[in-house]
Image 1 (cartoon, protein in one colour):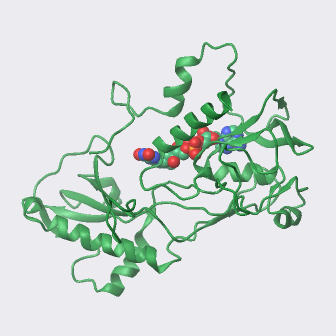
Image 2 (tube, rainbow, N blue to C red; image 1 turned 135 degrees about the horizontal axis):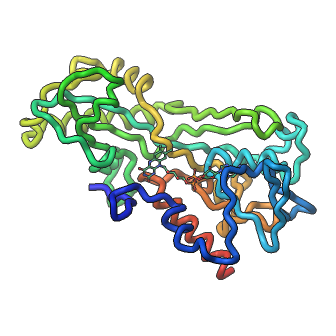
Image 3 (cartoon, rainbow, N blue to C red; image 1 turned 60 degrees about the horizontal axis):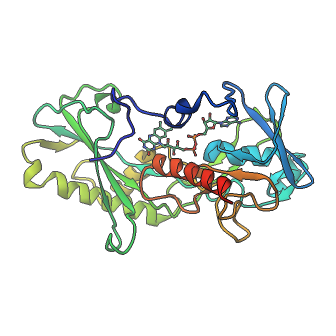
Length: 320
Ligand SMILES: Cc1cc2nc3c(=O)[nH]c(=O)nc-3n(C[C@H](O)[C@H](O)[C@H](O)COP(=O)(O)OP(=O)(O)OC[C@H]3O[C@@H](n4cnc5c(N)ncnc54)[C@H](O)[C@@H]3O)c2cc1C
């Protein structure tokens, strides 16, 4: 059974509710909402503030910490002149720091939904996914983290696009350690210009192999004795599908579960963006604390780890 971050009423608890609401009274905390930061203000390789959409600049006494997520953090860096110097030049942005790793190494989790007709009505789940399974298709879980997660969920008719098919349940193999890496690039120097996001999903055959093993594993599970009272038939891709059809099914149906990460990765080589203290290489007084700093995407849903990155950042700032 999954752990969920919910409040006493069972309502999903956001990071803001968990961490900011209890300290709203603090005199050294100001929260501005519905306003975007359009640039990090950099002077002599030092972040000295942020520029807001309104044109106002907020100066900092100590440092700037960016937590805009794995899509927007690299965007903000690139728009502030931190990124691949050649790309920046192409868009007419003066390079403050040549960091080719910014926007690279984009990783995500891809999920394949296998719908099953059920023999009996299934309860509507309280949360979208209440239970799951972690496995390693290549080796022992004790040796290595899982590369495959399987989400199970009950009667979620809306997931079938409005088709009324009677009782259904879903088992959903999910790729946890993609070998395919994507990238995020600017299309222009304008802040409101959309990004060029190329996730490069399933570019490596190995990623398709893992999801294929996931289909076989799910089939073993749903055809087990304990599932016999529930299983009527596999709605898609169907047991008659051969290996080639299954691969095509994976390529056409696998979809994101909104876990982008890795685009400002932590490390020491020239492909990395932040050091082990979350400080951006080559720019003083600038840290990043969000999913973008993960060198490799984690083998689980990301939210708890993102909160721990925030907790760790707080520790690093308080106890340098
Ligand atoms: C629909 C959905 C469902 C999910 N479900 C789960 C789940 O069940 N379990 C789980 O573990 N994970 C889940 N995730 C993933 C998880 O929510 C994310 O991985 C995590 O929130 C990432 O945290 P972050 O701090 O990196 O970025 P975010 O949480 O995206 O925070 C970035 C913040 O920065 C703000 N921002 C961006 N640009 C700017 C700017 N220029 N100026 C000012 N502010 C800016 C954004 O508005 C946002 O509030 C889900 C994600 C989505 C989208």
